[in-house]
Length: 82
Image 1 (cartoon, rainbow, N blue to C red):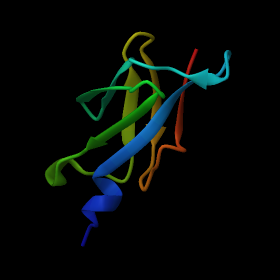
Image 2: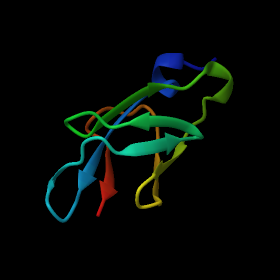
Image 3: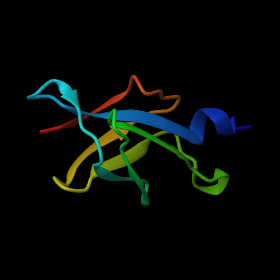
Image 4: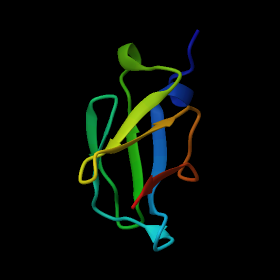
């Protein structure tokens, strides 16, 4: 049994490590699904049940920088952006 709220609800924040602040309006892909960070750098999306995994590959579109997140995750999870 897999809890969809743990593996399906993906939340994290895009963070500029040099400026030490969130990055708004940045496009990302999470396991092939596109999303855009909000004014506070937060990204929220739901992964369909058939595509849910134990970890997700995240690519920040403008820089092509990639990272990995592991559910359960919240807006306290950081994907760095430079």
